[in-house]
Image 1 (tube, protein in one colour):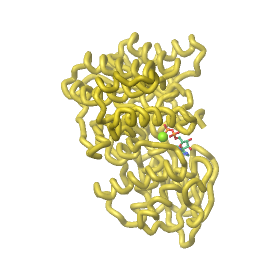
Image 2 (tube, helix red, strand yellow):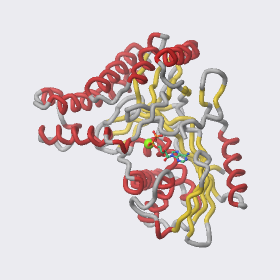
Image 3 (cartoon, rainbow, N blue to C red):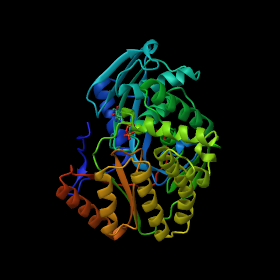
Image 4 (tube, rainbow, N blue to C red):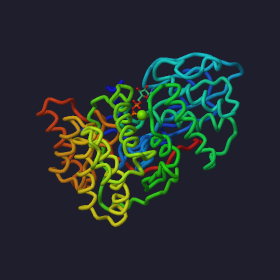
Length: 400
Ligand code: ADP
Ligand code: MG
């Protein structure tokens, strides 16, 4: 499925976000073609790139993601019976089941992300009926850009619209919870909640500072002035269910327990330095320093201090590579080469073990940076990477 880049532009592989009106029309047409009737609702939810704060969400810390212009579109039509049918342009197959079948771990594979939302919304008391769904996406799948939450949230807002619900902040908060339950309980993939929160609460032109202790979200206006956020998908597949994520989480819990604090949010650097287990100490060092870097990154972006952004991204990347050990050669190459070719800042982003890097690049250097990364990957014998421009965009919407 990682090979589906039918919309690449030119010799540098650049994924275009597409025009929302065209994509919405195209998902409506595909729905009518597939199910024989037009959809009643279309929901749209973006992927995201995180600027700072990796693995800090489940440590009650801070994160700073940006919602992308790249989004997933979900078309929906209520049925008069208990049947659920889900199809995806990225999968070319239709999942069929009944409402009664939906539940924790009852659905294998990709359809669980969408069907899980139906289940979780019903669990929350919404009378979601049997439904036909069709999704199409411009978010690279499995690239650390949160195609999973884009899928969940696009379905959630389409279903909310079918039910005649207004997308108020309260409803958005409820949908965040339903989408988290879909991913953790139905699919069985651990997720800290950052992805669903920014997919529903992102604002155009801004990053979203999320505090996982207070559950407050604060919009941070991003005036990039002559700079582009360039994302590079290394096309090394990360799989959150592979164990790397779970073992990092366990190390963080073990560090908090040794320090006698409920979460690492409450740990100090001095206390962490005293931890005797080398691995656990390095994991906790990453979390505590990364939470501080989120605060510092907000300031650096607000003041457009690009040198500071560069130092913070560099420190974060080193921390993830050496202390949290979630980087890989492809990510290290993408980050180092981006900086050599003129990026003011670069780091890996997302859960790690593959996925994407993010760089802040002066507009006139974007082409050179993409080409330099492509050349370095070819030289190293890595798969050709794919790039995209991360344009800070709004969270999920209902179309028309
Ligand atoms: P990420 O969220 O970083 O892209 P995940 O591993 O969390 O990576 O989620 C990727 C999974 O989500 C895919 O393997 C697939 O099961 C599902 N998925 C995401 N987008 C789509 C889509 N458009 N159609 C079908 N399945 C999708
Ligand atoms: Mg995901």
